[in-house]
Image 1 (cartoon, rainbow, N blue to C red):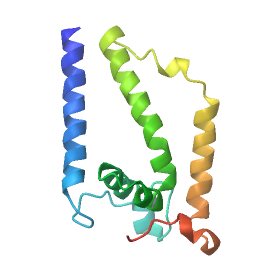
Image 2: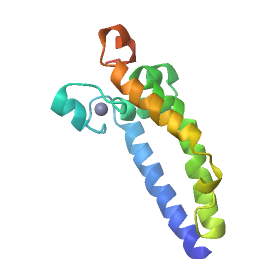
Image 3: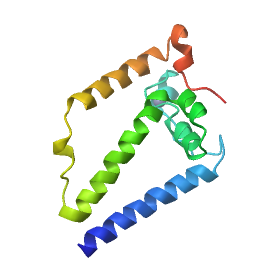
Length: 134
Ligand SMILES: [Zn+2]
């Protein structure tokens, strides 16, 4: 049990450190993760703008976060709840007791929506879905 608590605390520490680093760095200071899809093709993928969106959420600027990446921003509370529950499950039971209790259809629905989002944001009609530059 103590070992699992130490592992979880270490993971939480590194996650918090990464979030703090992202919080403290400004726009364009290199904390963002360059997108290989965008760099190779010039097209936006579903994840483009996600690190900027996370930085905006950390600064409590939810509107800008949605403009950078709406799908990622809307998924954040669910991801945070999932990883939080996963950490608790790991500490208590030493294994993942959460994933098997989650039905797959919402996950597949989210993946489908994210793929459609990634395609649509490259068309001029849906340019409002593309990541903004402030
Ligand atoms: Zn991308």
